[in-house]
Image (cartoon, rainbow, N blue to C red):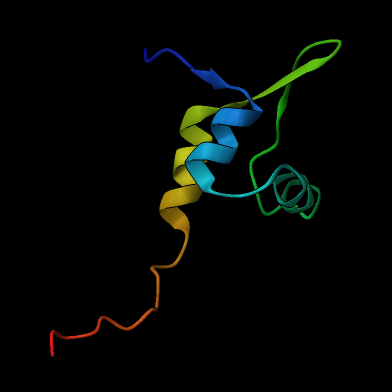
Length: 68
């Protein structure tokens, strides 16, 4: 059985590149994994769920420019 790793908000923001407010908006819209209550004033996310969400995102569609 694999250990579950809980990550806190700064790590989630760093992994996703999203702001705190955007994370909570996506979570409220059920488009991002739900946080877990760790204590009265602390929450965290299951790292594997966040990584699965990142992997499910569509690839970037920025065109690659050829060297001139």
